[in-house]
Amino acid sequence: MPPSLHPLVSADDALDHVLRDAFPMGTEVCTVDEALGRVLSMDVQAIRTQPPADNSAMDGYAVRAADTDGAPVRLLLVDRLFADSSPARPVGQGEAARIMTGAPVPPGADTVIMQEQARAGEGWVELLERAVPGQHVRPAGEDAREGELLLEAGTPVGIPEAGLLWGQGILRVPVHRRPRVGILSTGDELGDPAAPEPGRILDSNGPMLAAAVRAAGGSPVPLGRAADDPAALRAALERGRGLEVLVTTGGASVGERDFIRPVLASVGAEERFWRIAIKPGKPVLHALWEGTRVFGLPGNPTSSLVTFQLFVRPLLRRLQGLPDDGRAQIPARTVVPLRKAAGLRHFLRARVESRDGSLWATPLPTQGSGVLRSSSRATHLLVIPEDVTQLAPGDPVGLVPLHWMA
Ligand code: AMP
Ligand code: MG
Image (tube, rainbow, N blue to C red; front, side, top):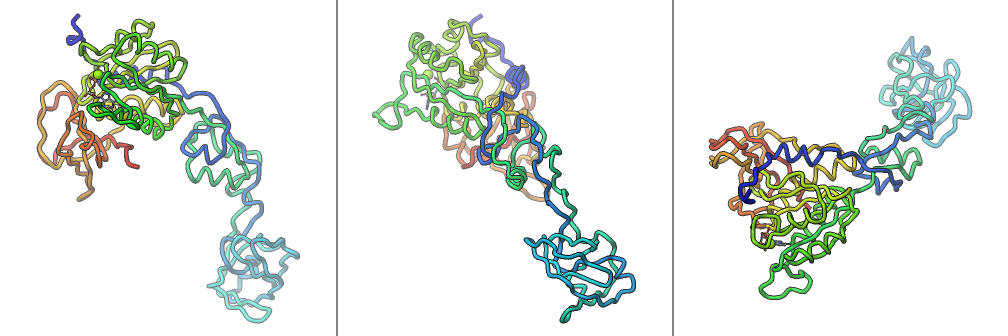
């Protein structure tokens, strides 16, 4: 079959292929700081009871609730307790202790009265209202009890989780490893952005996709540039052998010097799909080369970035145990009328604003797949389904959020 007649795979089927048999990777232990944004690969047990003792949630007075039954009542002040105090004596009948937030509730006392509901003098305090036992007392172990499950395997470590761990004195945790992602730019025309030569197309895709890999939690492995030559491409691919993921750009389409597909076949990679029914980014290839998942992305800078977002990023997240199957769309409305031919699913780079309880999306003025400037300042991709040919202003559309903002 001539390559141009090769059947297109749908965007949904392509993502199914990408995520098939993709499971979170093994464990590495790292500091809580390094674990932020990653996922616990094992349960983490609490090693301290937190808070360690019943303590006051308010600045006020620790008393026996029964003593307030006849409020207003006057009690004898017998102690003053701060967050770092250890109560020296119990609170007896007819007695109260001045207590600050976080201070341990002394034995005998079973409730805390806010200072706003008391009137204090020299050595005494008058309580104006009845109190119930346990009021304004934070029980020991409210956040965690020593030995119990603190955070389950599979929990993403966000800022509160990190706080919980630091509060336990747990400084290192097991997380799923980051996938290593080889990045190879291909094309005879490419030059080095650090040594620009006139007339060359500077390899922006390499460093740009490395940044996108990092933003998706992966660990980029730059493999440099290769010419449009089967032997050179094979040698360059070898440099990425054994990595979890390998991303190439350029040379994946039907041009006379597009060699990625035959070269991958020649090294024994098993093709899972080639060419997706989408715009931009149709000529995407996906193959399994021994244990390495290979993506042949288009060379056009915007196509490579959009297809990375739609097909590579979900895989990188899945390999780290992060939630995100890449299919979620946010409901919105189009500001302008839109038209297209039936057949491909279109992804328009758009800006979005919130108005009248809806999100309203405006596609950026130029959508050319070679034009990176049109991607600048896009916050979402506006999705027009395969069979839709026309949308009027206000019609519902789906949005894919982008993660391109610095
Ligand atoms: P290709 O997919 O090889 O047909 O390339 C499509 C277009 O993308 C051509 O105009 C290339 O010059 C351009 N291109 C390919 N690779 C890169 C790259 N690494 N950086 C910037 N532009 C590229
Ligand atoms: Mg090329």
